Length: 438
Image (tube, rainbow, N blue to C red):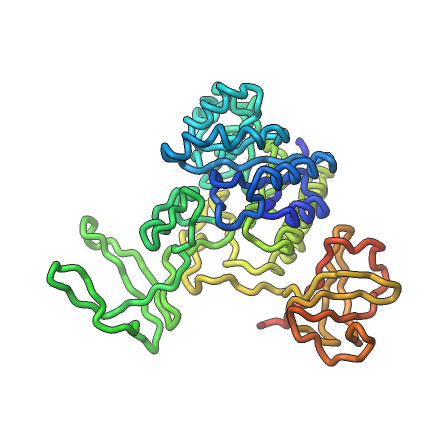
């Protein structure tokens, strides 16, 4: 068993700091204009990327630059020009998917390590061997693989480093190769502008035809139904073969994938020799990065120490907002276990972030409030050095006046500092444990 690298997302410098504080070995961030998270990327220029790379190296960590779009000619023309100043900061690897761009980089910078992006859809050992012969140093395997397939690839191409996604959003398309966003609102997912149109709420609307036989709405209001409906879809070329779709008062979400959670498989992935375990989420909150990194760090450490899997790690991830969890394709499941048909937005989770700790002065914690909470609420303090559950029975404002509750974002309050609190509370979060059934 090797000790896998824990790779966390860094959409902003704050995400980078949080990931490393909670135990990540490496982070990945997008190259402006050339990654699949163009709209949610605070590393918007060479200087910002350079600062992030230097910070990672100062901490003895790795920084991978994501450069994985499907480029059209215009971006091919400018790619090497825009990449060159970033490479002066020496990112530890480029994450790339396009064979043409890979060829250009290899010709100009033959010693630059390249990791093959999941967008390249490597699903078999022969593909991995092909890329090894092209000088790729790591392959990020497709999310559509089962554990046995990953093991077979590991055994057949032992020289290649392998990376596997273990947590985060999944896509109803094959590893993200989707045209739906571009079709629905002209934002090309393969150019980094995905709007998650697959997760929108779709409702049936009464319609007729215009003079050119195109469909037009006859009412601005969607057809409303008081009762949930189950609809069977029949494909004309397969008469008698029906696909169920479900619709309630909220609409239908037939393309809305659940979120991946594979913490229970960390030990097996480590045992088979997977080099890197990856968390998805460059557009998620810093709290999400903190919580997922903390949980997977513990899972890796305990697995490599030979300890049995602790089921409480599953429960800790339930604290996060999610779309319902699935193991993805790692083991065979019924199709309904991949999708959530009931709602498109995330479930709240068992906990809610109510603030960050801005100061720990003597016997008090100063909280920068994010959501409403009150004395007597069950709270959890999330810190890089460990977590602590407690209840604060008093609360005051910055002037020492007692408060009945913290109203919400924009307010600063103080609560008594619980016993056994770590000395350093940098990158710490305060959450409220939600009552069962909330």
